Structure formats: structure tokens, C-alpha cells
Length: 231
Image (cartoon, helix red, strand yellow):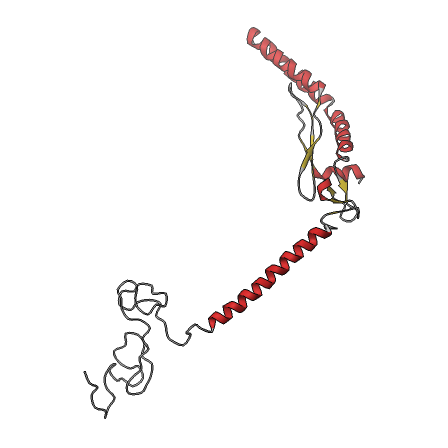
């Protein structure tokens, strides 16, 4: 594959084959940042002539019936006859003009614009990033990493003050509203997260329990053999 054909890989054909606005134009893009450059528009004389002929045949057709339409095949043939050769010539000229706006990287072989080109190394910015920019990026990344570590340490210090032993009720047993771990329900005011134990066997009682699931003692009753608690 020739160098010209390789360069053409990053090209879009904007040419128009027939009509009064027919001509050749090609758009090349930087393979690093995708910025584009368009070649100057080059008119396609045969295509324009066919467009004028088609307009004239349409005008005659309106005046004389189907007479104007009889030249359609000839018009299309005129537009197609020299299209391939003319396009190849225009394409080669566009590639030569595009080379003045792009540089070919010696490492990845991509064509890049001047802003993405490292002239000191003869490489693109992807293969040889700008040193000052790389240092600044590394500084920013270092600052971010250090800040994240400090934030994690601060969070760990705050976590030491969080009560992780007291049970929390996330849903109110009275009205079933979300409590978000509060001591009282924000909807009905029901007391929440009250740690209760069986007075007989000291087993923690689930919220709303009427009897101990371990020994069957009624919740709130005094243990056997103990005087009643003052009311």
C-alpha cells in the first residue's frame, strides 16, 4: 500500500457526481483529535454540463411533452464517462494539499494536525506527550490521590464516634415509615431502637415482641421470684 493510500484512510469523500453543483472535495481528519481540514472545491465540468443539459431537457419536456426526457440517458452517460479518472486526479491533488496540514507519526503512523504533533521528537502527542503537560497531569493526579487518602483518614476518625453497637430500626413498627436510624419515628413519634432484654433470661427481644423467643417470659414482666417493680 502506498503512502498516499494510507493517508487516504482518514478521509471522507464529499464529491458530487452530477448536477450544476457537481465537483470534487475531500475532508481529512486528524487521527489524534479528529479536527478536520477540507480540500478546496474543484468543479467537475462534465457533471455540471450534464446538469445544465438535464435542466434544459426538463424545460423542453414541459414545452414539448416527452421530447426533453429522451436525452436523460445521454446526460447520465456524460456525467459518468469521465468521473472515475477525474476523481482520481482530484483526490491525488487533495492528498498532496492535505500533507501540508498533517504530519505522519513515525511510531503509530497516524496522520495528525499541527496541534497534536511533537516536532521535537517527530511523534504525535499520543506517542510522545508534551512533557510540561504530562508533569501537570501527574501533579493533579498526585494531589487528587493525596486528598482522597486524607479524606478517607478523616472519615475513619469520624467513624470512631459513630455508635455501631446500638440496634437501629430502619422501619417504624407502628406506622411502617422509614426512620433512617432515628431514635423516634419522624412520622408518628414512636420510640425506636430501644434495646430491651428478657427479664428472665436476658435474651435480646426483637422489636414488638410480646414474649421472649427463648424462654417464653412475657415482655415487661418481672423475673420469677422477684418482687414486682414499682409502677
